[in-house]
Image (cartoon, rainbow, N blue to C red; front, side, top):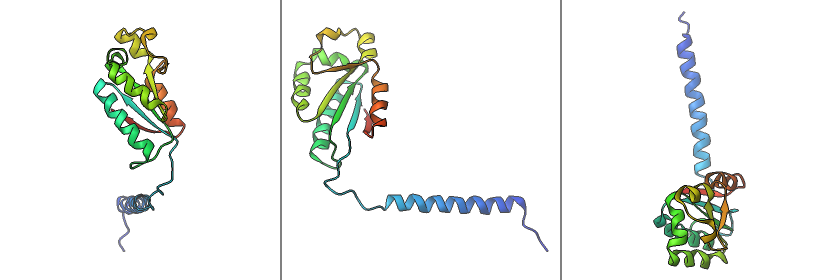
Length: 150
């Protein structure tokens, strides 16, 4: 009588576990889509270039109107070189201020401001400054915000 080897038993066991996990994953993928009136707590968009701030503005508008996913609020966290646009590009600053009343918060990373040499006093009053933009993004994620890094 041939006895199954330990390796054969282990392979069968791993195959069974893999198939179980694949079935669970497939079940999650095929769940019913969210209703159109479902609203997610918010979205945080971490941006590092001035061009990405413009993309984040367009995305924020789409998210707040329910184009794809509807969110209650959007935070645009500005880091790295993009913080200089918060004082140098007045058209962009006006656009950020304009969406504020619709639920978009603009946040500047304090570490980036210091590194790039942007004077905090030069920022418009509607721009919040946090010590660390990455930590702020993680904090918002922990509160249920969806997150995208550009």
